[in-house]
Length: 180
Image (cartoon, rainbow, N blue to C red; front, top):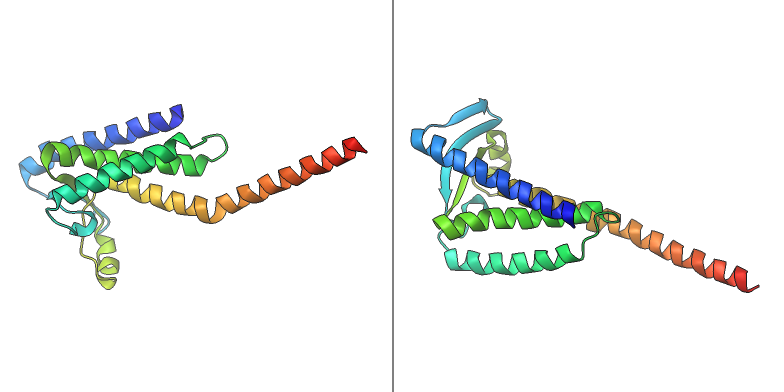
């Protein structure tokens, strides 16, 4: 659990530090900074909506969703086991960090600071009906956390379940052999 707490603190700290930097340098200049043309750009945006700009200006809804998410993720975090369920435990820590990182912005600023942009994804997003978007480290943590959780639940949980079942059968066999 200590590993998870450290991961949460590191991700939230990185998220807030990069948002502070974006706010003070990108917002002040008002310019876009192209890191790799067509691949990665930095530009300051104030997002009062959710991912991809949906639910713009619905602060109360976000507050309620955030509280529910943090309670749910917090409960799952108390059940995490970094020795036996690494991917699951890291995914829950990332979900908490991402949720909390954006919650800090919403509480203090009433919007979330976004500043990362990957232009090469724009045609893909447009093809599925989504608009161009900017994001931040908290959003990245949430996305990676969701992907890792899906991988764990789809692939790794079934393997752990088979290993538990096999272990139970082995113990039963050992008990029978010892009784004989």
